[in-house]
Length: 282
Length: 234
Image 1 (spheres, rainbow over the protein chains, first blue to last red):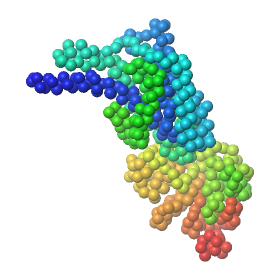
Image 2 (cartoon, rainbow over the protein chains, first blue to last red):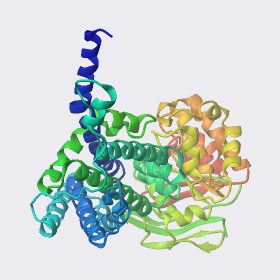
Image 3 (cartoon, chains in turn cyan, purple):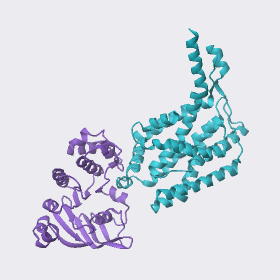
Image 4 (cartoon, each protein chain N blue to C red):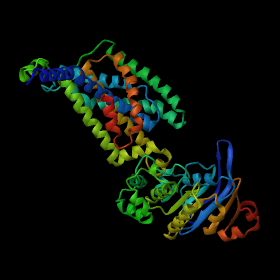
């Protein structure tokens, strides 16, 4: 091999290590949050400003449960404990979101409030949720990562390939990208193929006609919040694993999620979710 | 007692009274038409029959059973079906998905009913993978019909099925409605095209300011000089 082609490969390794892999995992975390925002916007017809803080709430539960599990020694070597507690955290986050819906959003749906009213009330929910998280965890940074740090490190990569530039592949990156891909595929399948998913799209398309077809609006709203809770908790946990957790940072994710939600108009179309996912990554 | 009966219905939007003791009824295998000037409360009658608007007084009975207290969804599962005037399809879903959503509340196999709808409207079979928003007005009306038929209703309520379509499509839609009636269903529709609608109707109601002004068979109403003068343009 000429030194030129070696240079190109080295450059590619450098780019992968510092740009492509971090961007892919960050994009995946955002994509999940954006998908949650999109779901709320499409089904409930308002921009949910509390999304970032709901993510913080989900992550908070994950952090608390992880601490509990580690203190009891209930861990599996090699796997981050945070992943194991995600299902339980989703249950808690669902309960929280459903309670908020009961207490606040349902009222505005009932009186057929303008979208902007609900958006403003979601800002209220944002402050309350952020307050709860800061009250429980404080404002300092939290690390809750354990288990294997790297799939392969820079040194291992260099030793294996003999290149000058190395690539490190963190476990958290691998998990983030894989889980995000699987989740997006699941949501896509759910909305396109299952009866409940189609009913959700129908409800989003035309509420009155959905009612006339015997689709229960309350059930659609609940399912939306459950999906949102799952996406939110997973996104928050993955983000926290990858970058550490800090309440103020994670709240700002709302804005990033919104930027990505210009894709929302595609979400019902066949390739919508894939496009959403791809454009989020790049 | 008629199959579907709305008796002495009184209803209002907020403080604005719309219906004053208005009554309509329709038998199985019969086509009843409600005509009347704008703002007479024609669509409101439908909304009350469907439970989308609560009546202040009066009763709605289906097959002798009082359904006044039931929710819209429960009335749908009792055999009522409704095709609204506008927004009567799910635009970003395919024709087939529209039909599947129509049969949402059914627990049994709905594929046979979908086949029946395709048999009635062959064009929908060709377009089954297309989004409803890409169809023409007449085709979309057929999707709306098909969606409503998916619950295997015993009575169809139609709100101005021919609004905004060309005369040729209008004839087509009326012939579809007659097919549905001939299949033994009860059909109640609100129509702007009073002349054509009364021509094919078994029974007609002329509604003025929320009251029954004239009632009779379609022929009777067409031949009634007062109705002709006021509503059919001489």
